[in-house]
Image (cartoon, rainbow, N blue to C red):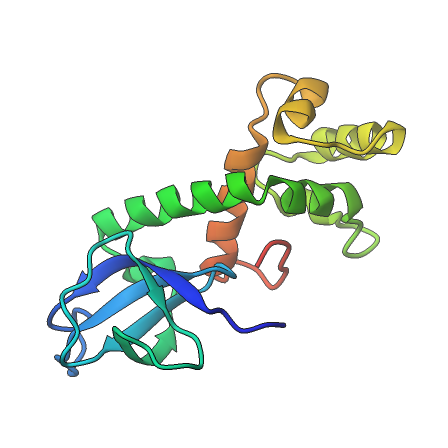
Length: 177
């Protein structure tokens, strides 16, 4: 798996993460591969703005000194959590083909559990309908998926919710991260 080159600032922490003994400027960022990281910032770096894109690759970095640790969404404040949802929505919408392809190909985890049932809003009947519909013709977009499954299903929102659950390590299975 390729390493992330860029990430988006969800929270700028001028005095570090609350409850931490380390008081240096830091930030919570969302990587392109949907990882949440706490990063230490360079002393000479200007304060970061929420939503700002920062370089985290192997070459010379302007703002980020080093990655401290991977964190879960519970560490975010309310504003950070809102920005996370906004950025996730952007990512899920701009990578629609990738996520639809996953929905089209995903199969059972074991004899009792289909991976689709891990996605919020996918009960047993919905999983059966998805498998049946994609067997007829693979889905090509969120809108087509919603049209074929019923108006009450919001594919993009369900994928976003599942990504949050995976970030929170709610279970051992991973679909999107």
